[in-house]
Amino acid sequence: MFLRGALGGSSGGGGSGIIKLLVRHFSKKRAENVRKINPKVSPQEASTIAQSLYQVLKQHGPLTVSNTWTHAKEAGVDGLNSKTHLKLMLKWMRGRKMLKLFCHQVGSNKKFLHSTLPEEPSEGESSNSLGVKLETEKRPIKRKKISH
Image (cartoon, rainbow, N blue to C red; front, side, top):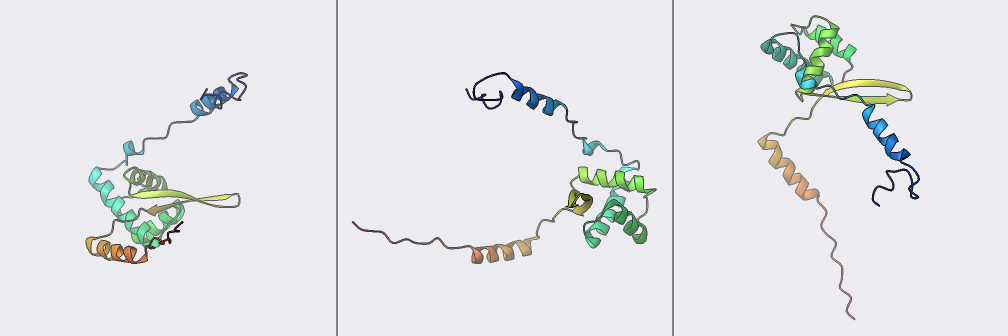
């Protein structure tokens, strides 16, 4: 009787719950495979453009597509033909785990921002942060034993 909740009630009166679940599942579109995005340029040129865009996003923080386009033009990123090409390159970079896209919602307005993923700490930083972590950990509280 583990399917009781999925079948739409505890009395077992019909399978409307499972039907709703199946309809919801099959009505969703599959996520696009962003690893197979064609950047419309050679792989070497795509890599160069991606590195330039990565530096722009790293320097100026989370940016919308429009702001990224403005900063990329100011920085003189070579190889970008249009804003549509920029969007394609950003999607290509997300597929290669160079960027992340997140939504910032204020009321009914949404802004989609691209940002760089956090970088792995280098060897020198990792030992230092480990020491700080060890110092800030709380020690377990010792409780007194009650003798009867």
